[in-house]
Amino acid sequence: MGVAALALALAACGGEPAPPRHVIAISLDTTRADHFGFAGNERVATPRLDALAAESIVFPDFMTVVSTTLASHTSLFTGKYAHHHGVPRNGFVVNEDNEMLAEILKREGFHTAGFAGSFALESRFDFAQGFDHYDESFDTFAGIVGDQDQRRAETVTDAVIAYLDQIGVPEHLFLFVHYFDPHLPYDAPPPFETRYDPRGREDLPPIGLQRGKKGRLVLGRETPVARRYAAQYAAEISYLDEHVGRLLDALAERGILDQAIVVVTSDHGENFWEHVPFFGHGRTVYRTTMDAVGMIRLPGGERGGTVVRGVLASIDILPTVLRELHIEPPAGVDGEAIPLRGDPGAVQDRTRFGQATYPWRVEREGSWANLPKARFVREGRYKLIQTPYLHTAELYDLEADPHETHNLLASPTPEVQALAARLAGELDAWAASADPLPSRFEPSQTEETLERLRRLGYLIESEGEERVDEP
Image (cartoon, rainbow, N blue to C red; front, side):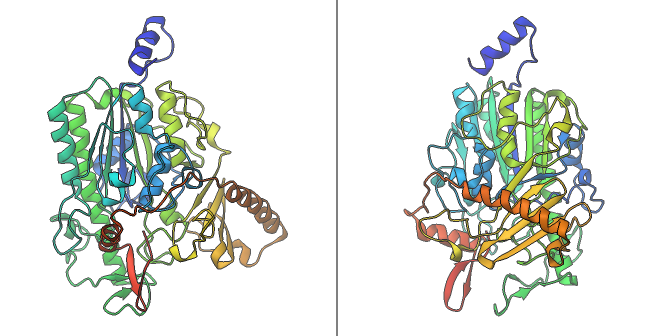
């Protein structure tokens, strides 16, 4: 029974509330969870998303499970950890055996439309499985990035509005909108570029991720220049907020918003000066990159302002949306539905895992590509990080040390040793459960792929050879 038939049946028998008519998923790429007013940030102006949060159920301890765009979005739309869906990082192909959210909803009678903000989600990587319409018409930003690598938030919102004007409002709509703006380079347009630094981007040297990169700046601590980069990043967030607001207005004007379940999340965050590498993501699993925006607005803003505490993750979104639609999730989903109407305390005891996607050089043929890379287990207030290729382990008490600066394993008590051993057992078992669907790096246009990734800042040169340093 499709969603439309189910809604009529439920209404007729006076049972559960009818499922939402529409599903809207808004993804904010490279967006730190701590850069919004609703999250307690008093410096960065985000009025539109703050207003949406007031009408939504908010998850203050929400995280991604993998730290680059394609792998993270595939986890979001399959409800699976990366070592099950099989996409290790950007540039790989999503296995067609994955059941993506768009495919599930299309079978249920939804019209499915997606709008990608960057090349990382191009249809050549088979991320667009299940979409009736997939818009990937990227802009050119001369002097910043190469042709068709990305497009600004304004252009993305314009494309969505134009499409809705063209097709009207379907009976059931699944709309996926991906905004890429906070990613490097931080280049918000006027007047946003001077909102937090009156000099804008003037005289800012390019960011280098390693020492010895001639002409690049290596940032290893909070300095005046580093703060200027942080100001430019904040400008991107405020610019993004304005155009997400325009999207919400357009949905409201067409009668879509109040009949939809709206998911807003980010695929990962961004490290500044807190941890190496500076101003980047993908190589580590600290909170700066793994904490993510998480909120869901129910139709009509039901239960708006509710806060669900406890460790939640991107893999929990698919089963949550499907439960609201009264659709059984596919087999093999790793996530669990979030109790949007039930007892929020039901999520307190969840354990969640995550992993990094870089560096490429540590990958071993014949095994799960991310196995040697940084990974973590999060259980309540404690987080254990292992980085196998560096042979290191870290344990943090996030209540006492939210910025992960004091590794309890540096001088462990017997109690800490026992806790670390238990968490290490859980993390090792999770890592050993890797059973990825086959994936491959997209070979047909490899040079074009590498060139675009290079222009987006994913590739750097080191001692005469080229390698990936961050996603």
